[in-house]
Length: 187
Length: 151
Image 1 (tube, rainbow over the protein chains, first blue to last red):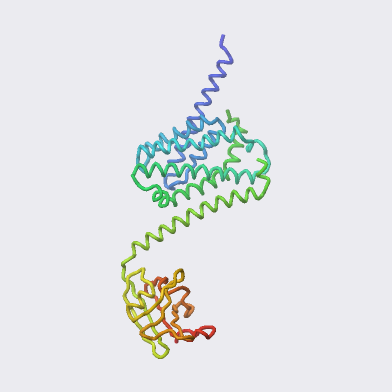
Image 2: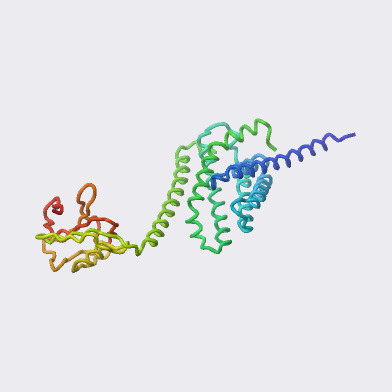
């Protein structure tokens, strides 16, 4: 006699891991497809969504795996210290996505979408700011350069990254999560 | 999420975002400017300087100076200048070629612009001259308002 509950559990685990795999693949593919625009990436948004929909651990896994692949086969070059730093920092998006799910009802209530969109954009911006500071520390350490020098001369890239994430999180996060939820894509 | 109902909360988020971005950009451009200034230090530029002592005008066209030089530096290259430094304000030119300030006559400096002569906005030692610029020292009656422009 086949245990139905056991099958359901196996199905659920399979669905969970295959979704993580799919989201990782999506994050990597979007990064490669946007390689010609430095520092404008959809990966951060995908990692955040992974964290929100499937929990902090899933967000961390997608963030690490995404950068593990993209960072090791990176046309801009491979530097181990920066690779590790970006892998770890990318998990921030997943952690914050998961944390928002636990602590807030931002995507549950359907009111004040404008305000929520601005807040999400701001969350994306702040997370990116922290991400950029940490990756710049790693860059400064790797090339033995003063941190302030790296920060200041990298500003055009970090500002692009922060503004693009502010806009991406503000415009697409709210509708994207709503759609995925409606399609049943949530743990 | 009740704080989001307050429009000031949203305005604060947007303002914080724009402030951080604007401050970052100003820091970046300040450092770029400083770096550029360092790089062009020592390049020779040419300035046209006129000096009118109230009677005659002498022109020193194409005076070669190092970039980063002030109007006072250029003037000292072509004339005998006496000046006093006032902390926080800069140098007050007391005399050029032995022609001294004597109330109400003072040495005033002017710069040529596409809109005509414009009175120097800062002290001569604080004004950094540009390549091809035309500047003028005019010994004139400062009690007349508006000040007479160079002849």
